[in-house]
Image 1: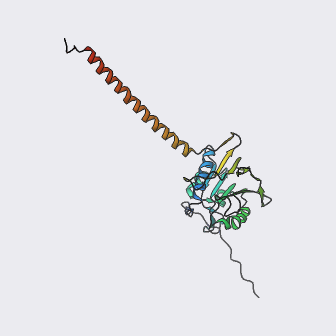
Image 2 (image 1 turned 60 degrees about the vertical axis):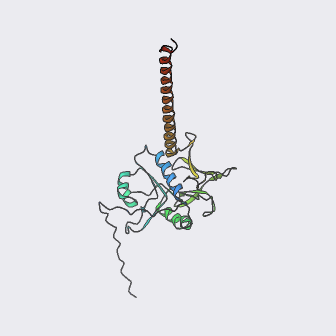
Image 3 (image 1 turned 135 degrees about the horizontal axis):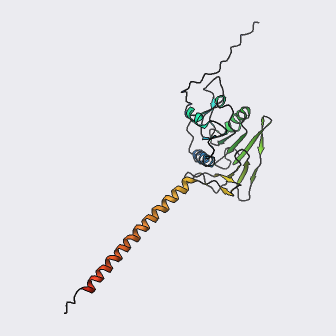
Length: 256
């Protein structure tokens, strides 16, 4: 039997104006954790212009087909041309020259199976050094609230995750040099909060939610402004009364 000729695959030529499609929208369960995680980590590394932190972005990994892509809920890469990636609206591995250093997935009813199966294998094949998963429900989907893995000799190996007596689960990320902490008391379904936080061992503090701080500062400034206005109004009223009293004291008595 004659063998079929092999069809050579030709890498896609990227046009200068090519832009990756926007990622698929996340559901209401995932969004608070994805949004807060991206904010925390991006703010932490904001002083490093060659560090990309992107939440819910597109990663293209097949140079022969731009329709083949994956959308991790968090992507972190060090030593990259961030403006070039942003212009593409996505992370194109063969153009960047390296895979992301860390990715994270946030569990949902429709995605958790791929997170622990297909995506886990794909991320290892792509050479992504760390892979984290967080389940906002505490384990309804993954069976655990938090898991981290690091790539060793081409395969993922568990990063130790410790569960404290109060229910907190935490593990250390060598890539981020931060501890990822999940706590059941940090309600994920209340006021768009996230029960995943990041602890910096160098400072002994959790990464600060600057949006919350800014909101509280604005409220305090508004309250202070109202108090200052009330004080100014009271002082003006006192001056008016004092002036009335002086006028009364200076006027001749009606009995004279």
